[in-house]
Image 1 (cartoon, rainbow, N blue to C red):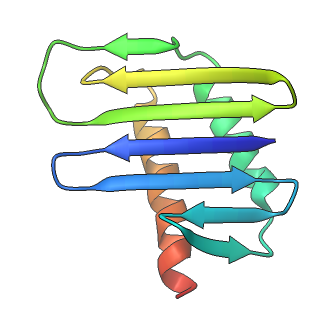
Image 2 (tube, rainbow, N blue to C red; image 1 turned 180 degrees about the vertical axis):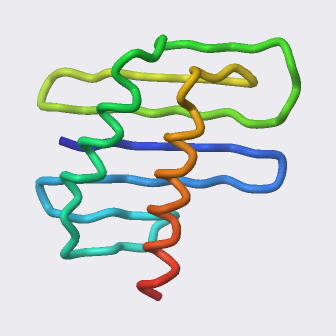
Length: 106
């Protein structure tokens, strides 16, 4: 399974690829190997399990996200722009945790 996450803010772009077949996370083209990526995949699947596929809000906070979950031939896409599910903070916290992994492995 692969999960591709893209988050755009007014000042930053974050690209994360999580791949359990090769047990690797790639953050902005920086590879982090030998992790138990399944725990991150399972958390993302749990967090997004009740999300709408598209959430577009009326505000202009400057955050846009894409999450593509690829499992064999099945692909699930989530996209949001200025609109967020109720548990988006859990996703944001998880993304911060993954980014911190990248910083620790420099």
